[in-house]
Length: 133
Image (cartoon, rainbow, N blue to C red; front, side):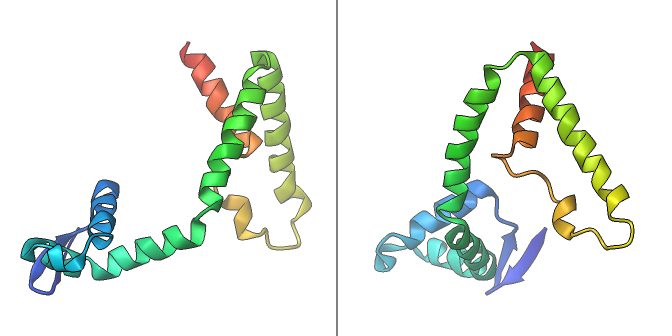
Protein backbone atom coordinates (compact mmCIF):
# COMPACT_ATOMS: atom_id res chain seq x y z
CA UNK A 1 0.00 0.00 0.00
CA UNK A 2 1.42 3.39 -0.93
CA UNK A 3 0.66 6.84 0.41
CA UNK A 4 1.73 10.33 -0.66
CA UNK A 5 3.17 12.44 2.19
CA UNK A 6 5.39 15.50 2.07
CA UNK A 7 5.93 15.01 -1.65
CA UNK A 8 7.33 11.48 -1.14
CA UNK A 9 5.55 8.26 -2.06
CA UNK A 10 5.55 6.22 1.14
CA UNK A 11 5.19 2.44 1.14
CA UNK A 12 3.72 0.78 4.23
CA UNK A 13 6.61 0.14 6.58
CA UNK A 14 7.96 -3.34 7.12
CA UNK A 15 9.42 -4.40 10.48
CA UNK A 16 12.99 -3.93 9.25
CA UNK A 17 12.17 -0.43 8.00
CA UNK A 18 10.72 0.55 11.38
CA UNK A 19 13.86 -0.69 13.14
CA UNK A 20 16.08 1.24 10.73
CA UNK A 21 14.04 4.45 11.03
CA UNK A 22 14.02 4.26 14.82
CA UNK A 23 17.80 3.94 14.60
CA UNK A 24 17.86 7.15 12.55
CA UNK A 25 15.79 8.90 15.20
CA UNK A 26 18.36 7.96 17.83
CA UNK A 27 21.17 9.62 15.86
CA UNK A 28 22.15 13.28 15.98
CA UNK A 29 19.41 14.80 13.82
CA UNK A 30 21.80 17.35 12.35
CA UNK A 31 23.84 14.49 10.88
CA UNK A 32 20.89 13.04 8.93
CA UNK A 33 21.06 13.23 5.15
CA UNK A 34 18.34 14.97 3.15
CA UNK A 35 17.11 11.55 1.98
CA UNK A 36 16.89 10.28 5.57
CA UNK A 37 14.98 13.40 6.68
CA UNK A 38 12.57 13.00 3.75
CA UNK A 39 12.03 9.33 4.57
CA UNK A 40 11.37 10.06 8.25
CA UNK A 41 8.89 12.79 7.32
CA UNK A 42 7.18 10.53 4.77
CA UNK A 43 6.43 7.99 7.52
CA UNK A 44 5.62 10.35 10.39
CA UNK A 45 2.16 9.01 11.20
CA UNK A 46 2.87 5.30 10.85
CA UNK A 47 6.24 5.50 12.58
CA UNK A 48 4.69 7.51 15.40
CA UNK A 49 1.97 4.89 15.85
CA UNK A 50 4.51 2.05 15.87
CA UNK A 51 6.66 3.86 18.45
CA UNK A 52 3.57 4.54 20.57
CA UNK A 53 2.58 0.85 20.59
CA UNK A 54 6.16 -0.22 21.29
CA UNK A 55 6.17 2.13 24.26
CA UNK A 56 2.79 0.84 25.48
CA UNK A 57 3.72 -2.83 25.20
CA UNK A 58 7.23 -2.62 26.65
CA UNK A 59 8.31 -4.41 28.90
CA UNK A 60 5.25 -6.69 28.88
CA UNK A 61 5.95 -8.11 25.42
CA UNK A 62 9.46 -9.10 26.52
CA UNK A 63 8.17 -10.58 29.78
CA UNK A 64 5.73 -12.66 27.70
CA UNK A 65 8.68 -14.10 25.77
CA UNK A 66 10.49 -14.94 28.99
CA UNK A 67 7.37 -16.65 30.43
CA UNK A 68 6.80 -18.45 27.12
CA UNK A 69 10.30 -19.93 27.14
CA UNK A 70 10.04 -21.14 30.74
CA UNK A 71 6.59 -22.68 30.19
CA UNK A 72 7.57 -24.25 26.85
CA UNK A 73 10.58 -25.87 28.48
CA UNK A 74 8.32 -27.33 31.20
CA UNK A 75 5.66 -28.55 28.78
CA UNK A 76 8.17 -29.94 26.29
CA UNK A 77 9.27 -32.50 28.88
CA UNK A 78 5.80 -34.09 28.82
CA UNK A 79 5.00 -37.03 26.54
CA UNK A 80 2.94 -36.38 23.41
CA UNK A 81 -0.11 -38.19 24.82
CA UNK A 82 -0.16 -35.83 27.82
CA UNK A 83 0.15 -32.79 25.56
CA UNK A 84 -2.76 -34.07 23.48
CA UNK A 85 -4.84 -34.70 26.63
CA UNK A 86 -4.20 -31.17 27.88
CA UNK A 87 -4.99 -29.65 24.49
CA UNK A 88 -8.26 -31.60 24.33
CA UNK A 89 -9.20 -30.40 27.82
CA UNK A 90 -8.53 -26.79 26.83
CA UNK A 91 -10.55 -27.18 23.63
CA UNK A 92 -13.43 -28.82 25.51
CA UNK A 93 -13.52 -25.97 28.04
CA UNK A 94 -13.41 -23.41 25.26
CA UNK A 95 -16.24 -25.16 23.35
CA UNK A 96 -18.41 -25.20 26.49
CA UNK A 97 -18.26 -21.43 27.00
CA UNK A 98 -20.63 -20.46 24.14
CA UNK A 99 -23.14 -23.13 25.27
CA UNK A 100 -23.09 -21.80 28.84
CA UNK A 101 -23.37 -18.17 27.77
CA UNK A 102 -26.39 -18.32 25.45
CA UNK A 103 -28.25 -15.46 27.14
CA UNK A 104 -25.30 -13.11 27.45
CA UNK A 105 -23.01 -11.75 24.82
CA UNK A 106 -19.61 -13.43 24.76
CA UNK A 107 -16.76 -11.04 25.54
CA UNK A 108 -14.64 -10.05 22.53
CA UNK A 109 -11.53 -11.38 24.24
CA UNK A 110 -12.92 -14.90 23.76
CA UNK A 111 -12.27 -14.55 20.02
CA UNK A 112 -8.75 -13.14 20.31
CA UNK A 113 -5.80 -15.46 19.66
CA UNK A 114 -4.10 -17.00 22.65
CA UNK A 115 -1.17 -15.04 24.03
CA UNK A 116 2.26 -16.50 23.25
CA UNK A 117 2.82 -17.54 26.85
CA UNK A 118 -0.52 -19.34 27.23
CA UNK A 119 -0.68 -23.10 27.58
CA UNK A 120 -3.02 -23.27 24.57
CA UNK A 121 -0.50 -21.52 22.31
CA UNK A 122 2.46 -23.53 23.58
CA UNK A 123 0.64 -26.87 23.47
CA UNK A 124 -0.43 -26.21 19.89
CA UNK A 125 3.13 -25.27 18.95
CA UNK A 126 4.66 -28.33 20.63
CA UNK A 127 2.15 -30.70 19.03
CA UNK A 128 2.85 -29.17 15.61
CA UNK A 129 6.59 -29.59 16.13
CA UNK A 130 6.15 -33.22 17.16
CA UNK A 131 3.91 -33.94 14.15
CA UNK A 132 6.69 -32.69 11.86
CA UNK A 133 9.32 -34.94 13.48
